[in-house]
Image 1 (cartoon, rainbow, N blue to C red):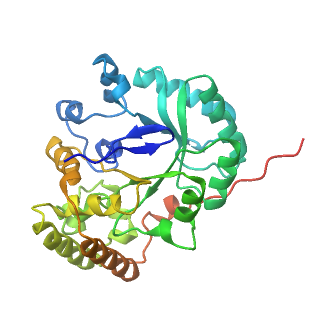
Image 2: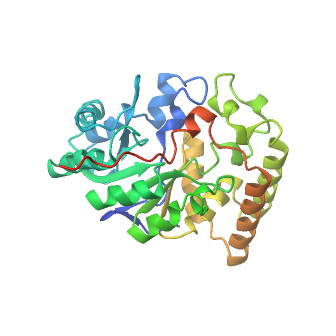
Length: 316
């Protein structure tokens, strides 16, 4: 079974995509070149152009992080895009995100520069990642924002919180939610039972929500999702992806993986049809977990980069 396509801007996309951060060094030792070429990375994904199927690929990439901090100034926006086009070996980027908001630069300046890239044909659609609701509104007033990339899973429901108001705002503006880390950074698959199962350099070790103290609670969530999965001959990861996609037609997911077998497993979530009762059951599981584990989903330094506001543009 395949799911009907969903929309990002005017483009129709597969509801289940692929997030490439999982093959970076953030998740411990990098695989061999042989293994990485099988799955892809920003550079390896450029091989799609050489297959002659570039038009079948909806390619998204981001800018903002530099060795000297976050940058959202107009010159850097354009410079970063040119470098991405060159590295990826493509003529255009389907979806170009600001990875994190630059608190020093009015978001109107950043999005204005991104809009110029659209006019030049280098970018088709614009996106933001982990911005504030107010920032999303301000950005959207400059140029339509097609996608909001945010973390969302049964262990992370932040965008639904009135404190952030992001889901409500995105829906008011017609912005598609691109859920990253929908499998809770792989934690919810059941493959990881404690932080001791992680590589010593894996940044998940530093995430408060995934502390050693919280893992017994996480494992209970996984056990309950596993039981639901048995009814569908599905894994807890597949059940999770299916549940997220039931949150609305304005949700797409981008789970990451280092291995082809898990890539196929993730795509297999399209075959899982949850009943209304099961959707409600998983909602209950998620809300209980949210209350039981209110810890931050990032280390403090990274947490401080989320939901930032920017200065207002200077009046002419």
